[in-house]
Image 1: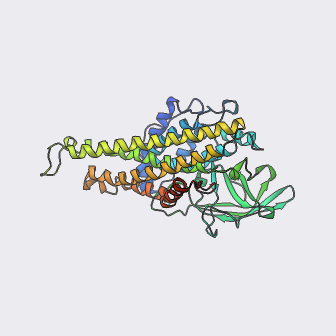
Image 2: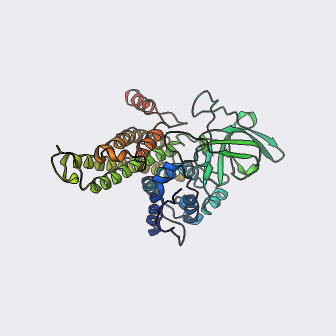
Image 3: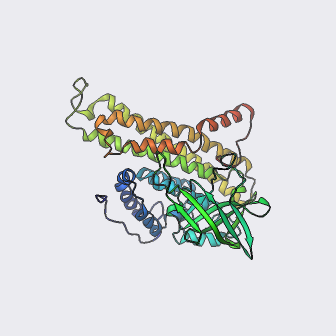
Amino acid sequence: MNQIASPPRPTFSGPLSHRSPELKDLLAFIAAGAAERDRERIHPYEVFDLIRSARLGALRLRPEDGGPGASLRELFEVVIALAAADPNIAHSLRNHYAFVERYPLSRRSSHRKKWADVIASGAIVGLAGTELTSPRVGASPFETKLVPEGDGFRLTGTKYYSTGTLYADYVQVRAAGPDDAVLTAIIPTTRDGIERIDDWDGAGQRLTGSGTTHFHNVRVEADEIEPDSLTTGYGVPHSNSVAQLLVTATIAGILRNILTDSVALLNSRKDRHFYFAQTERVADDPLLQQIIGQLSANAYAAEVLILAAADAHEVVFQARERGEPDAELAHQASLAASKAKLIVDDLTIRGGSQLFDVAGASATRRAKNLDRHWRNARTLASHNPAALKARAIGDYELHGTWLPEKGFF
């Protein structure tokens, strides 16, 4: 197999922030190999080693905890740029960034300092939450069990769609504890009894480490357990809204990449155009210029929506830090994320097709792998059905019914 052509491997003088000049080098290195990795199913282990070295997962950590203290807007700016380089990488980190919001950043978390130290070290956290036997998608009860043993637990069960876990140092596992209380175990992925299987076969997000994870009587210590409550973990109302917005931000990054590829393709078509076209030079064709202009406007709109929703979530975070009422703020942030999804999904999925209107039939060659944009956007959008989101928003507009507090909202 041919080696992936790429810029020099970047090095880092310290943890990256959204302003770090080395971030541009890292993104260029990631982008250079993205199409071939996706086409040939080459897992991005080297990229994740670089992300650990750069401590890109610590963007949101406070300076006193060893991070640069990025705002949510700044985090989402990085996620969009990362997704424009390679959406598989961005989506693999989605559960990591959601973990940081829940535990290392929350002053109400009983083990906050421990998890902050883990993230500051550069470690990456994945998630194992979904069970195919659950009667309702995104909800408990769980068949995966945490059974008390001495001063700790034993964990047994199977999880599917464990996004990011294949590349992660730690994994969050949602399980039923004593009296079927829902608990989250956060454990190293190398612990005895954990089996990670690369069996995700979706049309898109082929390299997001979203396979099956088995837990065979795995030892879990007491300080590796986080309970759900109204103030911490998954029990916080609308606590999953940031995670859902991260999916949409990844899709917005794909749209930015579609624009970049469209411009490059059009500029590369110097000698051949249809005999009945209005111009001899392809890049001068007003019809094709119109498509480029529309893609540019759509990419801009998608990113504006994401950042506006990120700002709404920042307001929630700050209110919680001050101990102020946050229910209405959290609902409005969830509403903003839901509305953004409906628009960004549609613009990006259509953009994945418009790319070929610009590029012509030669762009469909498998070697170019340009269909990955549509495949990835379509797969990511399917995580969270648009029709159900739109119905919930409509019910709110008509009757004032709040969006669901848990699951995929």
